[in-house]
Image 1 (cartoon, rainbow, N blue to C red):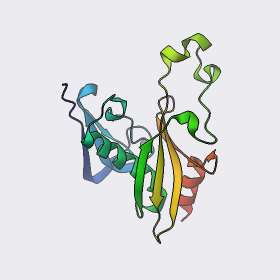
Image 2 (cartoon, protein in one colour; image 1 turned 60 degrees about the vertical axis):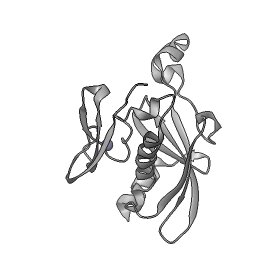
Image 3 (cartoon, protein in one colour; image 1 turned 45 degrees about the vertical axis):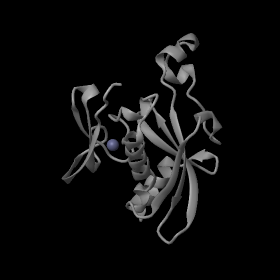
Length: 167
Ligand SMILES: [Zn+2]
């Protein structure tokens, strides 16, 4: 069996995210990318994390994924509250989700399967500070290289981050 060492490090002081320059204290070290040392913000959390692509992830991979997904879900709440449950679902099962078309990907229809990695998706139950339970869906897009959050049948990622910057 192939050993797949992946490490997630929480460090301080904060460094800019490798993609968007948001300050972050989490980095992923991934030997598959030449031991890339990649500070990643909640939105770009899965960028250098290879464990989500494994056919048979082990317990610690699932924990690492759950950590990165939870961090994204709780980011508008300053990481208060908690994620109760995360399970993988087919992206097409998410209300409001639409897989990118060949035109959007800039490839020909017959090349989509070969040139496009299917999005990853999870159903997530979480609890915000104060105890209210909510359910959402989280999608990781390999085309956009970021997470999106679906609630009530639509993508609310941008609204959430605006709320966070207002509050
Ligand atoms: Zn980022």
